[in-house]
Length: 456
Image (cartoon, rainbow, N blue to C red; front, side, top):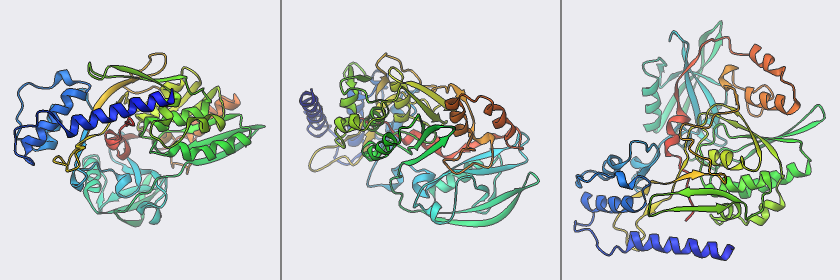
C-alpha cells in the first residue's frame, strides 16, 4: 500500500510539473508581461480551482497579477491567496511573524474604555526579548491612545511597519494607568516548541499540550512529548489549539495518530474537488506520512491510544486544527471547550512555475478541495461549535499558559474530575469590566493567510 501511495504521489507531482512547466500551448503574450502571468494564473485555476466553473468569461488580462488573481476568486472563497517570494510586499503579514505576539483590542459597551490584551507571545521573538508577556494591557500603539475609531487602523500600522511602539498599562479603579513603553523591531520568528505540562490533582494525572501550529515536522517533534505522557500513565489529555491557525494536513494526522493509536489503514480524510480533481480518501497512515517527515509506525508505537480527548478552541482555531477535531470524532470522543472555530473546511496546494528557468515568479495557494471525515461529516465553513462555550477573556488578566486559573483549562479539569461546581467558581472570577467587546483580533484577522496545505 505504501509503495502504491508513493507512486500515486509521484504521478500527481509529475503531472503538476508537466502542466505548469511544459504547456503544450504557451500563451501568446510577451514573457514577463502581466498578460503572460495572468494567462498562467487563469489556466491553472481552470484546472484546479474548487470553483473553476464560476470563473468569469470576460477578463482583463492586463491587470496587475495579484489584483487579477483576486478578481477571479469565488464570493465564498475566504482563503485563496498568491505571493511572489521575491517581493516582500506581496507576502502575508501578521503581528506574529513581524514581532512575535498576538493581541485583541477590547472596548466597554459604551466605548469609553478601549485597551488591548496581549494573548500570546512567541518564544525568542522581538516581543519576548522586550519583556512582553501574555496578559499585558496596551493603552497606546505608536503613541496613539486606542479608541473604537482607530483600533483597526493602528493594527494595520503594526502590520506594515519595521518598528512598533507599545505603551503598557495597569488597571487602577477600572481605569488605565500607563506604566512603561516597549519598543519593537521586526525580527525573525523561529518555530515554536510544544508546551507540555502534567497536573496531578485528586488522584488524577492530567496532561496538557499546547501546539501553536501544524508546521512541517511538528508531529515528529511531538513523539517525545507523547512518550513522556505515556510513561506517566495519564488519565486524560487536554490539547490546547485555541490559537492554532493550521498548517499541514500531514501533521494534523500525525497528532491524531499519537492521540488515538489508530491502525495505519484507518480511513481518515476525504478530499472533494472539482470535476478534474474528483474525490479521494486517505487513511491516517497515508496522511501522516505524506510530507516525508515521519513513518506512521513511529506514531503507533508512541501513541496514547486514548478513547477521549479534551480540545481547547478559539476563534482563530482553523484549517488543520479543525481537521484534527473533525476527523478524530469518528474514533475518539472529542470534547471541545472554548469558542467557535474559524471555519476552514477546505484545503489547497502550492502551484508554481516548475520550469528550470522560471518565467513566472508567482506562487498560488488556491482552494482545491472541500474536506470531510471518515463518516462524510464536514461542512463547517461557519466554524465548529464547542460543546462547552467558554471565553478566556471573561477572567482578566489572562494567565500565563498553562495555569489552573485559565478559564478553558479550568473547565476541562472540572469535566475530567466530574466537578461541575467549578462553573460557579469560574463565574465568580469574571472580569469586573462588564460587557467587553472585541474590536480587533490580530490573530483572527490574519488567519486567512494560514493555509491547510496538501503534501504533493
